[in-house]
Amino acid sequence: MWNHKAWVGRFLPQSLPAGERLRAYAGWCNAVEGNTTFYATPARKTVTAWAEQTDPGFRFVVKLPKTVTHERRLAGVETEMRAFLDAVEPLGDRAVLWTQLPGSFGPAEVDALARFLRRLPAGLRRAVEVRHPSFFTDERATSLLEGALSSVDAEWVPFDTEVLFRSPPTSEAEQEAWERKPRLPRRTRALSDHPVVRYLGRDSAEETVEGWQPWTEVVAGWLREGRSPTVFLHTPGNDDAPALARRFHDEVRALVPGLDALPEPEPVEPATLF
Image 1 (tube, rainbow, N blue to C red):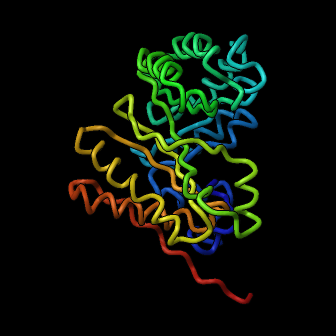
Image 2: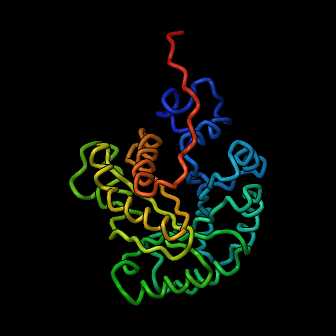
Image 3: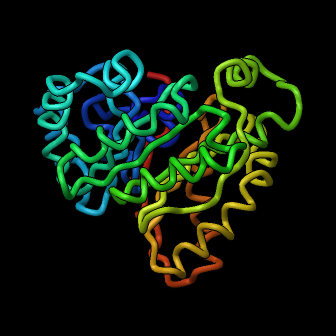
């Protein structure tokens, strides 16, 4: 994500090589979603470079490979998981293993999920995102999943798309998000000391900010309880995501004054004609 083209020249210096942009991104935000790991396990030396470009407190929420979650559905994945865990090992305890499951992965497969989570190395944080509607609408399914996650101190990752689906799309990016993103009820219950939230707004900054207002109170409450949440702010195109993330952080910090400020971004040189 830190190589997003729309950020170069706005949030990231144009002169920085692509391999060094994470360092600049880390001046805006103190966590990142590792979506690329869903498509291919990175080389260990690549992950080592990620670790070297970021401070010890920077968090990496890395998505497990689709071979593991979507194709094999968590079964018979020992070889793939050994390779993945070896690759991300340089991140140490800064890594959160993000298991994003397909919408067809339902309550009948919770036992398989529980077995998989129990086999992950101790000390690595676990976070699970489910998209099957039953987990959100059926109390027995909700309780079953919560029990499986709580037994291994894993977090349930909510993906809040309510504001996106509140009214019809007004752009190509919003239309694409309408077609691809899940439409599920908002969930604000944390299971662990390290909640992870994913929020998707709209092209309009005003609508995006209005839609996240319930989360500022929820996150502030978690902080007061001594939890350490990680929140990711998205829009359909993500062009303004770093600035919006900092705005969200500022709103939470106004409710919890003891919350540390985000780092100061490095200056971005103005564009030139030549």
